[in-house]
Every structure is written in structure tokens, then in C-alpha cells.
Image (spheres, rainbow, N blue to C red):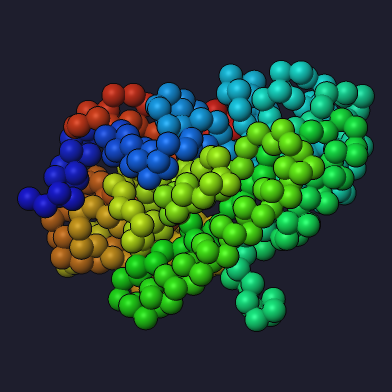
Amino acid sequence: MTARAADRARYDRATAHLDAPLAMVDLDAFDANADDMVRRAAGKPIRVASKSVRCRALLERVLARDGFAGIMSFTLAESLWLARSGFEDVLLAYPSADRAGFAELTSDPKLAAAVTVMVDDPAQLAFIDEARDGGREVVRVCLELDTSLKLLGGRVRVGARRSPLYSPADVADMARAVVRRPGFEVVGIMAYEGHIAGVGDAIAGRPVRSRAVRLMQAAARRELAERRAAVVRAVRAVVPGLRFVNGGGTGSVQHTAAEDAVTEIGAGSGLYVPRLFDNYTSFTGRPAALFAQPVVRRPGVGVVTVLGGGYPASGAAGTDRLPVPYLPEGLRYDPQEGAGEVQTPLLGSPADDLLIGDKVWFRHAKAGELCERFDALHLVEGDRVTATVPTYRGEGRTFL
């Protein structure tokens, strides 16, 4: 029996009393992935990206482990909810235009002490001031550095289009704009290198492209390490008490941790290890989060139909954004139908061994987005479900 076949047997036994569709997290794999991230971070704390988890119970579980500290959130409403729930260090990783949220943040000392918001434009500071509605609490802010690699005088750009702050002078000027404005305090810098941390460099069947990605990432790491260090020096000249410099991502933990200028790592997808993280030379994780769909039809030899399953992930549309049939091994989509809204045909010889009601296990393309489809996660240890916990959606929280 292969390791994957053994996992399938465990998961089927653990959930035999549960009807699919359902989502589960293998806690042994989850914890092993957390340990590997800590090892790669080499002593620097990891701030957990909540968008990659979207379950308070699992955020609490990982933050109770040595090597993890703080949350990197994705909306202001989520940040305030987490802070009210007892999480004391929440970094909002994206700028917000939530007027009601800023009014609440600036009116509550506990929230203002727990939540740091992201800015990269003086207009965002003005927006927050206009939203205060009488709130006088000092707003902790983090400045975001654009990490993209620019070549040929800027005519070629590699990386996400995020912050307008690119050079040390840009970020230092933004720091001065914050310092000059009453009611704000610069506490950190964030620089997420998505083109390094979020792009696989060992693409199956694509050796030339994989080598090109590795060469690009090596060049990007060198350029960013030098520029990030210069940015930190420039900002510390304006804000000597800067508290943290956040960088990294699941795919670049060890590389970013090696930079002296970086004080903490931001990562989260490496806990669940969705399918987009299969193609990396920098680490190998264990798939921990899966969902199961029930077989509801057997249309013919070598084909079964499962209920639903069309859960595409965000990003540029493509087959890599689809969930992948995982267990039993050997199933594939019908290329004319793909993953369907209410039914999905699956092809392959393993289909002939599946009966009505059997579970087919899938892996989602991106980590926490799976939780937007399910209101609960069944936590599996060995071959037992030891707990069932709500996702954000299960708690009535759908922030994006």
C-alpha cells in the first residue's frame, strides 16, 4: 500500500460516520508542516497569515507553538474581530477603506493597541482621519515596500503590483508623512516577495521554465535583500523605534530569514500545503487540508460523478487554480467538463472501484480559500476525528 493509499484508508475510516461534502485537516500533517516552517525560519518568529487558515481554532493551535507569534490579517473587519477575540498582535496586511472599522479602531484603546494597519500613501492617512468620528486613539501603521524586480530600467517588471513605495527614499518619505501627522505611529515595515515565495520553481514537465524561474528568483532575492536593508536603514533614521520588519512567505522562509534586516517572517499556506505549493525546491510539505465529495453517479466504465467540486481559487484563471482529485490516486477531470458547479465527472481506472456514497478526496489550489466553501473543519488524528471546529464562514464571518 502506498503512503497516499494509507492516508485514504485513514481518512475514510475517520469520516465513515460523516456524509460528504466535508472538509478536514490532518493534524499530524498540520503540526509537521508547522515544525518545518519553524526550522526554516531559524529562530525568527513566524507571523501567521490568517487568510491561509481562516479558522480561529487552528490559528490558536499554531500560535501556541514555539516559533509563531502574531497574525497577519486580510481585512480590517477581520482584524477587529480577531482582536476582540483575544489575539493581541494583528497586522492588517492590506490597506483598507472601511470607514466604520476605522471609527471603531480609533475609539477603543484595546483594539488600537492590538491592531496595526497597512499604509503606502498619505491619502490613506487622510482617509483614516476622516473616518475617526471622534476617535482619538493613536493608529499603529506599517509601511509596505514594493518588492517587485525591475529590469531594463523598469521596462520589465516581475512581481505583484502592490505598493507605490519602491526605493529607500520613497519609504522614508512616507515615514516622515506619518510622523508629521498627529494620531499615527510607524511601528513596522512589510515587504511580501510573492514572485519568490509564491511561485513554484520545480514545475512538473517544464524543466526549462523551472530553471528560468530559479534564475529569476535568485536575482530577485539578491536585489531585494540589498534594497530592503537600505529601506530599513532609511526608515530607522526617521523612526528609531521601529519594532518589526516583516518579509517572506511559505516558499521563501529560509531565504528571507537569512536577511539581517528582517525581524519576522509572514507565512501561512505552508500549514495546509495546497496544490500550488507542490512545485518548490525550497521545501516539501505534507498535504494537510482536504475536502471530500461523494460519488453520486456511475455513468459508465472508468467514470464516476461526484457532487459539486467546482471550487476555483483566486488569481489568473487557469487549470492550476482548480482543485485536484487526490484520493484515490489516478482520477482526473473530463477535459470537456472540468470541475462542475453541482457535479463533476472523474475519469480513470480507480473509478470502477468506487461505489455510490464513497468519498473522493480533493486538494484545493490555495490554502484558506477552501474554508469559504465549508462551515466546519473535521480535525483528524490518526484514523479518528478528534474535534470539529468552525471556519470563519461557520462563525458567520465572510470577510472577502
